[in-house]
Image (cartoon, rainbow, N blue to C red):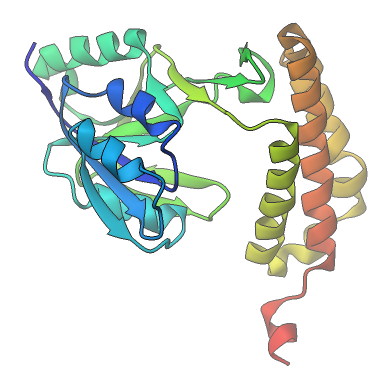
Length: 260
């Protein structure tokens, strides 16, 4: 089969240890690979990307939505596939995409495709809890979507119909427990910074009950206990992140107060 009319779009920092696997999973069957690389990176990521046939653009960091929109705007193909440097298109997902694109009638009336995201955390594939299926819309018709949201949870805003695919996008989390805790600190700070006007809604219900609900939902109702100790830890980490972000939101000041 000839290469599909898909531009693969990746934003990256210093990812020399991981980006090669992502690029290998899309090389050959997609028509174009574009990488927007943070301008200060010097660990060899650019050389690896070029080796795999990618076009590399150096840009300063603008935040996740803006950076992803920037690389998407550089695409020349009819369809765009967004990947992170630690993600891999599984053989099953690739085969499914190729079958859909083999008959253009399957694309009529569609703006995008979504698929489940399967994460490998501390050596185990997490198939339950809050982390799976983690369905993500990453493949869309050029001009029919753009990235929005904040720096913690950016999202693709699609205009039109989205079809669900079954193949997994593989996510090699890479981060250990210390890294997970560091992310909780960073993401909760961004959450509170981006929502200072919502401080009054960080009620005692949010602090006292929402974390326990997240724990119970992830570990019991969504069967996180089937994912071993990793599933147990993920459920607790989710609960801790929840209580931390609402505690920080309680302390956040509205922008008007800071200006005063």
